Image 1 (cartoon, helix red, strand yellow):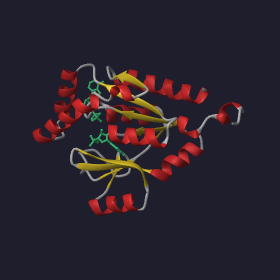
Image 2: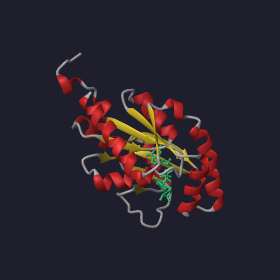
Image 3: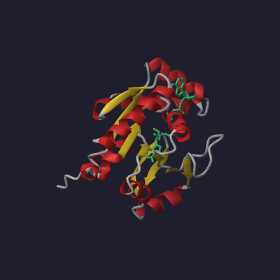
Image 4: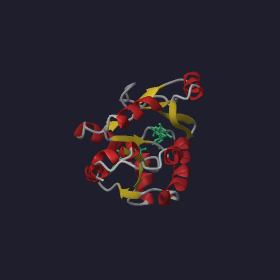
Length: 196
Ligand code: ADP
Ligand code: 5GP
């Protein structure tokens, strides 16, 4: 019940979650934020997915095998985790809690199932849904990325239909028209979380 200005903010308020259908542009936005706003700490997830060309262990993801992922779950080292389109993804718990305690603005880029787990564990977190300008554009982006075979793209689009229906569970939506606009809006939102 402290009333001492910023100190009264629950730490969870400094946590922002960015979610949205596969191919909408989440990792592009996060890459731009990493470049343009180093003051925001971006959680690095663990995944059992194989690296895409250009991805570096410890930067976009920590790449792990199934046994290592099982161990992380069993030892409670993940804040949340989910299986998505045949691979597992999870957020290492300790680094996130350390940043929140230190008052660092923190962003998680995770799927819908993970966003729901964060909502349950940290009700004050801000959940942002990144939406495509249209369904046709989402399909175009996912195919245009050219990183998945047709069956995986089909699976991700199928997931995308379900994910689009969950938009109303989020605190707000940002439409990914341009990456620059999305970054500016996200930063403004994270700042407003701090000022209360
Ligand atoms: P996600 O991480 O949500 O699965 P990506 O960041 O990999 O999506 O983006 C999917 C594709 O869409 C990529 O080829 C990316 O270059 C492109 N893309 C992302 N944002 C935009 C945008 N605002 N306008 C046009 N293309 C975009
Ligand atoms: P991709 O394979 O395209 O990098 O990611 C696939 C999906 O997994 C995306 O929706 C992405 O947001 C999600 N994802 C990435 N990291 C995590 C994580 O740590 N936890 C959860 N639940 N989802 C994640």
